[in-house]
Length: 340
Image 1: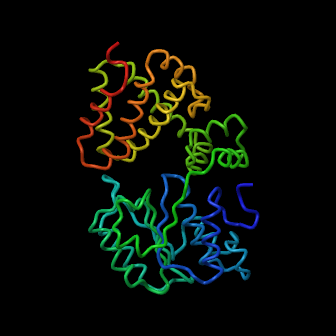
Image 2: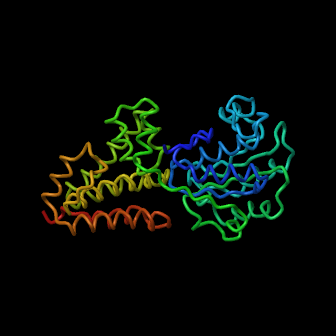
Image 3: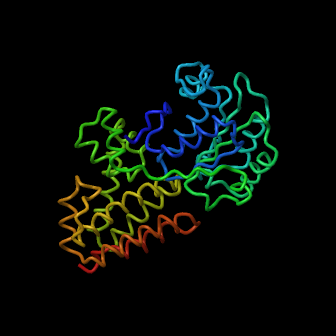
């Protein structure tokens, strides 16, 4: 079993993190600040909310917290707990601004309304500007006794060392495909759909569950892969037109481009594995025929170059202030097919 029978936490696939936090609570060694890292939708927010439930659950038996039945647990689960605070990102840039963090810091200094702790959760903190991070640092240096700060980020790379050193680091890994599949089947998915979503999730259990419940997630994914197909089949002019389209998307929200590149990366990985004759089943198994046709037209080095270029843009270029249109144009020049 992936889920430890002793755990009543509604968290799946991150047993070691749950065990660690359980021991901290049992031994009265709670920290005032935690930094939970991991890929988008890997389960960071779910772990943070569950830990907040545990801290404020009113069940008499501490071992049964969170009980999911008391008023406090239900309010946190519904998003209406008065002692839960959440930072708000800027609608245009997607970054945490200094004023938003200051607002949370001002509120967390107040005594709890009805709980043991006031808990503040800062999502996507690695996108926060340095001045905004400084605003959090002042509270971390002298935290109120009733405050617990939970910082969520994809990695600690862009977070100030003075902040990371004051937080308990909890790095979440990708959940195994078998664990994701088992989880989806528990939530009503048939074996075929659970297998496909587990492969596509890349270990992000939150994404898999959302895709199961919301049909628009898979529809969006199909649009993204169809866009890649258009790039591969298009000439230079068409590719540059698509680059311009993607630039306009990035102006609104770079997270949409990140999601797009993540999906393209899984596709090129499938192409490369198939081109190499690797027996590993493709992540995008529902597009196997399309991938097989592409492999017949390109070389292994072409697939490797496309994968590396996509990964470089995802992991490096997208994190800078580079011109997105030009970045995509360069990326598309590294994709195979232009010489044909």
